[in-house]
Length: 181
Ligand SMILES: [Zn+2]
Image (cartoon, rainbow, N blue to C red; front, side, top):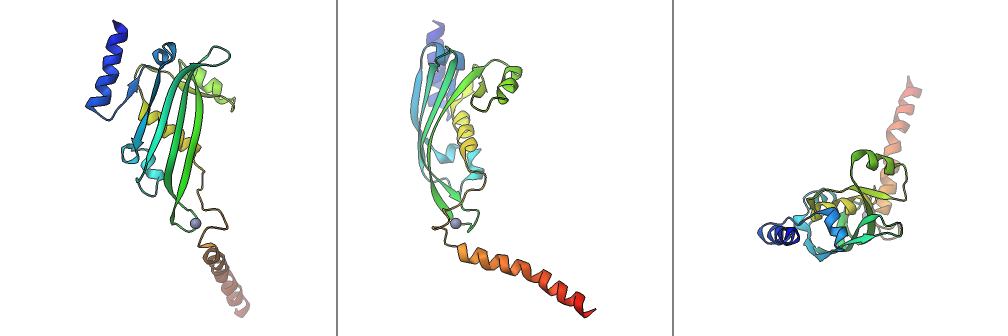
């Protein structure tokens, strides 16, 4: 019966609001799987990283055990987002194709212990994990620190070069002034 209640809770969450909530440990225990589409306008945190909120993403969440019988939430996200090139400040399409295996941990202490090992990504397991937030977090972690077009594609390459030259000018002028004094 508890199982039924949880299923109803998930159903309720799905249909009454944009939130999709899972119990992380149950999700793995019952080998559950969720998949669907998210429209980018629902991604409130990710919004700050995007050039616009056009497009949608396909996601899949799987509750699995790894080879050491540890509980894993597997997050798979595919799709395309638009980022702002930090060189020319115009938008460009960025393909997302990520798959993260998140090891469930039960407290902050375990989590900080895991932080020392970069090959394993841990996540604090709760009974009401928000799937959209989880997916957004994984996407944000996967993004380049300074997103850019590839050098040969970026239209503003030459402009940046001349900008660099201009930047050197004030110093040149300054040294001329010094010579005059
Ligand atoms: Zn660019």
